Image (cartoon, rainbow, N blue to C red; front, side, top):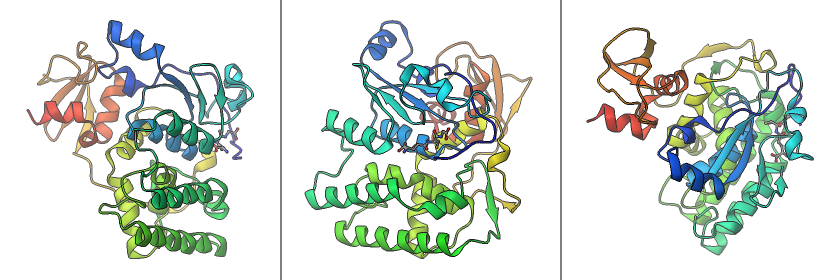
Length: 325
Ligand SMILES: N[C@@H](CCC(=O)N[C@@H](CS)C(=O)NCC(=O)O)C(=O)O
């Protein structure tokens, strides 16, 4: 388990992405909350396990109410999760009957069992076995990579020197990813066919390879690039810029470079201007915060909505529908 220099406080409100979505009106909101799961997550910039947990719901369009633990609070993670004891790490999932799951693998398996038609595991038995094996190996392995290159999804470093252990982890990743693709012959970029739990589990690995500029073979680079271009991954990363403290523990002294993912639409927050829209593209509420996107002004209902869009506008369908209209 990771130790943090400064630790966290209590649970925050439901995930803003969902909060600002079409779910958030009157009766729909009540129905949505009555049938959903509670997912406890950590800081988006740093919590690689939280990214996995969140992707399970985001990629497969499953209803969830997210609660964010604050990594910067001195009280610590476990103290903030008192209402889901004995869980003390993120992600943690509370089922509608109150059952608490605090291991990512158990969360993935249970959610897949409860939503058999959602496609969390491949339907082909061989591909499913390979996906399960890849997922299990990620859950228990790659210790050197995880230890030496903690996820810090906001930055990209260059000229990073790595240990023999990290190098061995990278060679192992190249090997198992390539074997999976040879065995499953996927038509797209993912390991075993359509995006599955296995890919969600390797998304933070891709973030580490990208963020630390780690050298991997061409096939592995293509797989990493697919994660960086994935709209759901981009939304998580965009939200990491909109909320969350900068934590010393994750900082490294390496020189920084451009994030190797798709370049965002040039954008910045602004104070004054005449927006093209009167209603926030996410909530439909009145516009109070402004952003400038490639010279055009758009408005949002709060700073989080604005800042996540400024960070990477193209990954937000509701905003792009407005931008392209
Ligand atoms: N085995 C857990 C690991 C989860 C984990 O270590 N999460 C980290 C954040 S990425 C955490 O909550 N750390 C809190 C702490 O160390 O106090 C899982 O499968 O999800």
